[in-house]
Image 1 (cartoon, helix red, strand yellow):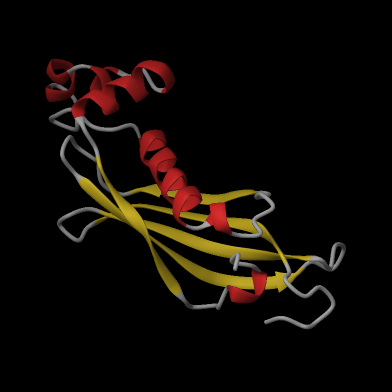
Image 2 (cartoon, rainbow, N blue to C red):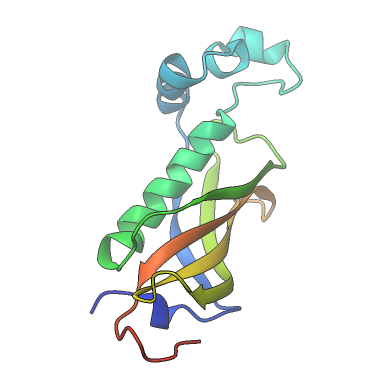
Length: 153
């Protein structure tokens, strides 16, 4: 059965998956989407504040989104998102780092204008292999209700 609005429990946390960043993918992503020298070239990265090749923060966000879609949203009543409220990059992600993602439900409510769906506020946390939070994202998403018209909390 698909995950729907009713399945979202405020305060619950779900492990979404993990990803290990490679040199080649960091450079490939940066080449296409964020061509700053410290994402593209090891020598330039050594001279930067990062000290070594670092993944773009947008690359980290994209990986997290991919994990969320493949491991949760693909089998859900997701109807998209009105946007991201906050992104924070706390630590760089380097070649060989493995980021584990978890998603916590912060709040939810049934839409007053479209009662067949609800709005769920979540926080995504990306944690590296050292237990350090490298990124947080707060966002909202729309999910269809399994039983529209029945009060869901």
